[in-house]
Image 1 (tube, rainbow, N blue to C red):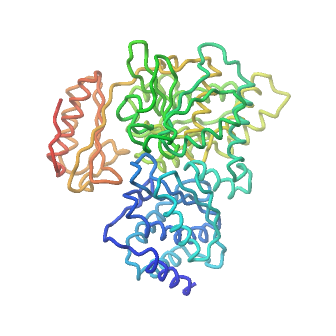
Image 2 (cartoon, rainbow, N blue to C red):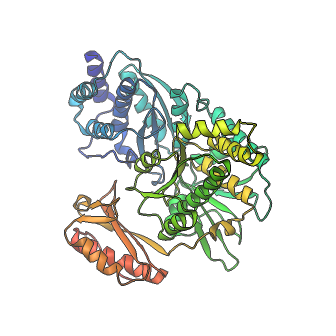
Image 3 (tube, rainbow, N blue to C red):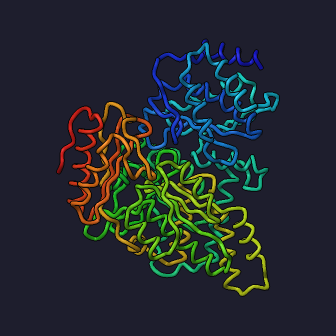
Length: 546
């Protein structure tokens, strides 16, 4: 193995040297930064993926993408054997390996091998894919060089959405029980489940059969077109921002629509049109529409979560299966959604820190765990116990027809949902299944409850690490006195709530606020932003209170 480690160093020095003394941090979304800074990082992630595969004795995934970031950025993240995020220890290894000088690469690799007791003789295998960014092709070559330097096997899937790569890894490591590790396997599994659910439901009422999709000029446009060919015209899909003209994520995509709360560039909305936005790598989705007065209405991850949780709860109840259903949110969840879920649906709610890995792990504590961030990233997890119970009841012909049909629907839903990770295409088919079964228009769905007005701001600071938090990021620990100042401001506004948290990728502090009116919300957000600027080392222009 020592010879291979030296070879890895030699290739790094000759082909993928670390050119700038810039520290880069592996966060929840992996590494993300300007694409020109990533060549050496992604080469080294090829090395790390081989060690991870040997350690886990499984196929490991690597995705090259920067999701909703601007087109000039890129990034990379590793995917664990069940299609999940890598454990925290491997995030630390990634950060350490990415930032070390070229000549010290063998030392870090040896450290990882020793710390994890890695059996180096195990033949590693890595799946990787990339999004449509101009920089992704060359970065994929750097990744391949890293894998080959340590003599790992690999499968290059080319262009995929991030959720598709997670799906491939999960399929491979479950020996096909989860599905076939190919694009056709992915489309067939989702489309067959969707068509079957259509046959099991009525579709009466105000359901709108067409979805107008803003694909953020990203990979989701290409893949949604392919999925659409498998749906047998059970759903009408119109795709906008397909990458033929516009720029990736520029004034379009789920992140833009969520934060700006306005329609994306490239999609002209008529009143009542049911619209949805993917993000750049198609792992987030939000819905939206305008009413007859031209007012914009966002139907975000909170509304998606409540729709799904309510539907699943009803099916579980009708099936008679005793299962623990729960919903996991972050502090960004709108207060009205939490109240509706707990008071109306009577579904337990857990709150965790921002980041998919936190939501995913918490959701695993339930028999059926629904998790969504307000930004539209989320999915549903079924435990092995829940899956077994659902399949047993769905196949029991001695049971009453209504119980069995509810279980059958649940069993097919398990195939429709990408349980590995949040998936815009899978989530869209799930939402459309539920709306069709309920006979609801997007307006009827949105009317389940009324969101409290909310606002998100960024405050530039010299060092984001001066902000530390507790209680799932809802309370500030440091700097001292900031939380007390926020509490005093919140008390001034009916239904007021605000929290701040450091960004995971840049030196900014994120401010969230909500209150009874938009005017009060905007003032509260501005006042909290001013306090952050004053007490946490703000830089640049001081925030202005509206």
